[in-house]
Length: 420
Image 1: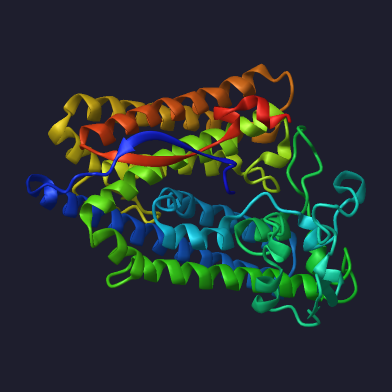
Image 2 (image 1 turned 180 degrees about the horizontal axis):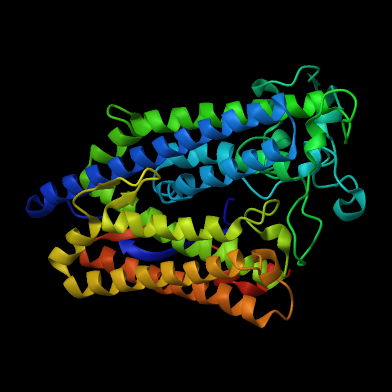
């Protein structure tokens, strides 16, 4: 999701003095290695999801639907840890909208509960299109033939008319196809799409089961294609790796930008505090599956990974190397110690939120008005993320840096504007 406000929180372009140039180069190489491993694991787990989706389509059942949902959740674990690479790396940021845009107007894709969802929107004429039930339609003055749903169909729909809520591809479109709408508000329960929505012929529910299966398959195949592209960008010889390693000082700047922007405006603000201020489960990051606690936790872990120069892969192996922490410690050990402590605290606060959600209070329930325990868990994590951002600022200063702009959020920078 694109934040609503950009805030300049700190200053300075990092200096590439001869004394630290070699250390910077080693640190940036570790950063690129972590990105390559993270996107590689995101691709591998997406390919496992692809297999589970194929099995669901071939033999729809409660078991194959559950397996596909579990594969989707597993695919989120490495991907969320890569979100820290988005900010500061234009190659990633320009691509990210294809794979992780949210929230989405799900009526663009499939049937919805009109009572809960509402009718056509003036802001988004395509919000109730239901392409699965509509083989031919118009986007503005352009006629679109979607008689056969393919990855190209989904590309045509994604952010159609320049509207960000027209999310047709990526993890959250697939999530909707596997869970359906969560109609429980701030009450217990996730989406409950039946496996019969994928039965071909007699027994099909929701109508157009063949087209629904085609959409799910096309969206999943497209996710794999997109992840192949980004994994290649960070591999040896890839464009993203070349961009950060060509100038190690700028590479370190990209690392700090990613840490600060995800920590502050994106996660603390847009993904956490905003939804709490509005008491709105539609602002929940994984709103169909009730998996938000995991997305938040692994985002926080990804920030710490970059600073410590270490990433634990799903297979149990660890990718590590010279770290940003060591670079900061070489010039300001007290700043490094404080930032490491604060990163540990934010991860612990997110882990506590995750444990409570896994234990029975889903994230959307935490957003309910009057839920003091839920509010305390969310704000504990928000405050920890904001606190560590100030220490990221101190790290930049310690490295003789100038201006870096971190993403901001009205929820943090101008709360009154949220309700205007």
